View: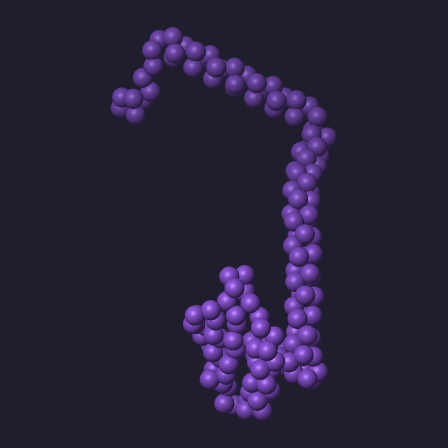
Length: 160
């Protein structure tokens, strides 16, 4: 390149010019065909664009369906775990999922590994003393279950 212009050998410059002319000639032929067909050509282009859009959506829709199925399975499993907790740990008390979230899942805490045990220390919520008594009793039930993780650590829950 010199002074912003391409420097080619004589043969390369002739080939480049010939190719450029051929491309321009083909573009003009395409324009003539498009112009002769008029509305039919415009309609075809719109339909091809719409087909491409719909085809792409089929793939997205398929992934969305699979994700929906996974999320539905998770939600049902989670609801079953919550029902089990209410039945086994809260003596069958009736409680909405929202109340269960507010009472348990929003509590802060820490987890420490001590020997062969994972100790989960949950901070009490002083504003909900009645619920904290129920949670403490539920932790006793859960601790008696002897829950292990895949590494063999035994879980122990407590309110602090």
